[in-house]
Image (cartoon, rainbow, N blue to C red; front, side):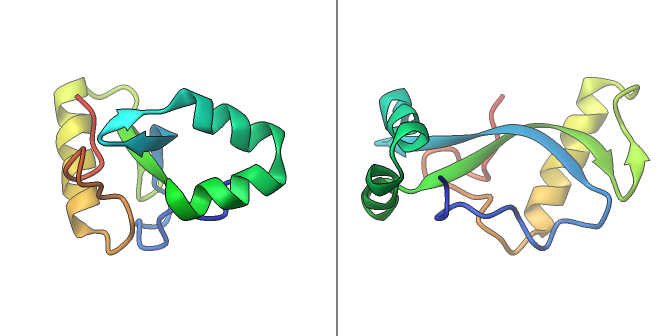
Length: 102
């Protein structure tokens, strides 16, 4: 359904992000495009060519095998930003900078 969007391969082992796969058009989430992809494989392939999916990270649940959920949000957020800065994958999007949402 989202062949154009692959999870980041360069995240450290044991890292779990909380976020959402979205389709953006001019930096706006297009929920209809997501719904169509979920219903029709052929339409999904066409949409992937014109409006690829991207992953927007909200939080980091675990980092290098360490559960981060009990830590204050500000510390998790800093870890998330540092982790994304260190990746070589598609966690960046022009509409959302480093693939982060506040």
